[in-house]
Structures are given as C-alpha cells and as structure tokens.
Picture 1: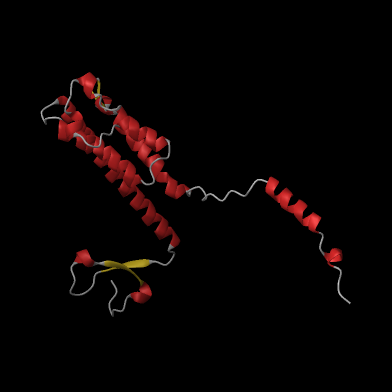
Picture 2 (picture 1 turned 90 degrees about the vertical axis):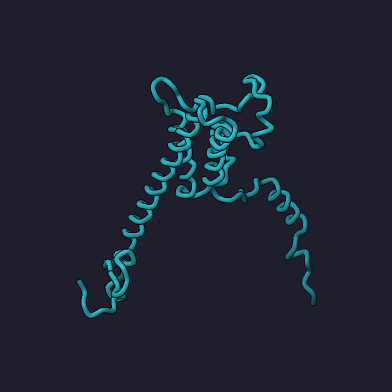
Length: 194
C-alpha cells in the first residue's frame, strides 16, 4: 500500500511558513565593520588633519587659504582651472574623511598632498600662500613619518610580547655589523656564543 502524501506533507503549512519567513527582516549580509586596528588609520588621519588646520605662526593660521575650494572668480584667478586640473582643499578632505569616502589612508594622504602640490604648481615660490603651503606640506610629512614610526614601534612591541622565546643578536662571521640578525638560540649554529 502507498503512503498518503496528505499525512506527511501539508502544502498550506509550507506556504504559510514561506510567507512568515518573507515578513521577517533579512539577516544583515553587509561586510562586518572594519576591525579597530584597520579603522585606526581614520583616527590618525583626522588627528594629522586637525594639526594642519590648527598650525599657526604668530597670529596667522597657515591653513586658512586651504580650508575651502579655491574660488577663481572671487580671487581674480581666471586661469586657475587651466593650470589646476584636480582641485582639492582641506575642507573637502575633512568632509570625505568624516563621510567615510576614503577606502584607505593612502587615498586620504594623497588628497592632502594634492592640496599642497596644487598650491606649489599655481603660486610662485616667493608668495605667502606658497610658503604657507610648503610649511604645511613639510609639517604633514613630518607627522606622517612620526605616525609611521610610532606604529612600527607598536607592532614590534606586540610581536615581541607574542614571542616568548628569547632572541639573541648575532653578528655573523664575514658580514658587517649592519647585517646582524635576531635569532633563536637553537638557530645559532656556532661554537662561540658571546
């Protein structure tokens, strides 16, 4: 004898389940938020940008000419867009950074450099705005270098904390001290340990 499908399968029940499933909100399938370490570059970039915006000598804030887009008409610069093909300003950088429109630190930093590259391209070196731009670019590069060094120290400390085995600085025979390496004790195959 055959089995009556009605006993085991109720089509109306399945249809109701499909309707109920469709009314429940779908699971969020967007990628997870970046890890705190990956997202840290945004905070670092914002801090550097703030230092640039607040930098002043005497009573002059050097970033003033760079806070908003250049208005060639108001400033009497009719050839500005002929010379500058990709205008950028620090206010736009800040807005893009706060709006999450930069995918990486490199994109953000490239736009900051573009601000000062445009300044150097358009303005003669002896003008005040060119000197302010050059000073801010120098400050920016100094801040980026300091940040990179700090991050490298943090990575090295983290790696050292994770690596519990002691390492020894080894100066290899026939090689200069500049080529000395950190080695585990078992990797040192030498008769004399100093």
